[in-house]
Length: 325
Ligand code: TXA
Ligand code: MG
Image (cartoon, rainbow, N blue to C red; front, side, top):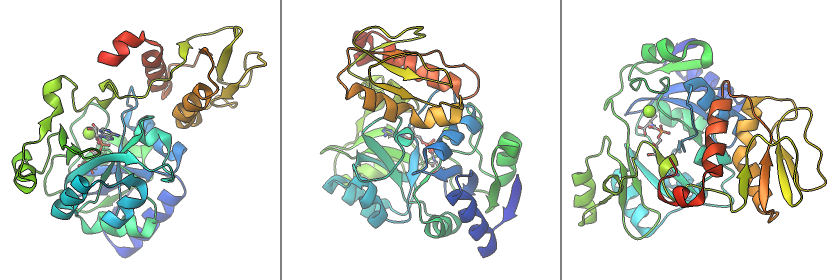
């Protein structure tokens, strides 16, 4: 991994790497982000692999301006008010995704929403403009570690898993952005962060709803009841496809079937499989099959997160509706 001090040349090299599907860590005003092209499913899958995340959480997508955000999500009047007050800055808005967004399904972990943020940092801004792609970027640390607020934290944690780190010195806030769901009429606080809730409430003239109170832990949006689960039942570790079933295959030797089938990765590549997972579930579900037979998928690397998600999708729906954890 290369650590590049901030310069126009470094930004150009970073933008080039991002457009080629590589990972680049960059500073924001909150923490360092582990960035990938949010329209490239395999690049997004690499984020999860590099972080060693055991499951797929939806990621924040960074854009240079409100105008860019409008192309990706449906900006409600509430969201517009918040964006005008706090962007650029450490506030993330969860909005309904536009069908034309071009974002990978993995970036939203299969949800029909997207979290958007306009960072207030000259290097992040320059990188977004030059890359000319929305950038998915969770904090640039290994899963479970504290967030990286200096370039050397990123190197220590992620080593050669990223192509490059843009070094912009220590970050200003040191904690992540505040996440607010602004997709409806009322603002819901999903994650406390660098913008205090009281400051947001002062702008809105009303209290934020705390989803934290409802038991849905903000750091685990995979637990939200709204998390996508297919209508079809899911049958794991299938060794044959039963009548009426669709097939979710993996690897070079898919099970025999005359019904609908989707191979996550004919070559047996877990990064490719991860990038296809949510789109595959949607596609198979749309065939109105009664259930989806899932071939065994190895549990190493990204396989752990893939199997975790499939296990959740296969859990009894009663339990799904309440916790999905
Ligand atoms: O300060 C920050 O926000 C840093 C810097 C790098 O910008 N980024 C960051 O990203 O923390 P990330 O991807 O780790 O944030 C994920 C959090 C989730 O825990 C969840 O609270 C929220 O963003 N989130 C993302 N997408 C969501 C969605 N579709 N629905 C609800 N919450 C979502
Ligand atoms: Mg983090």
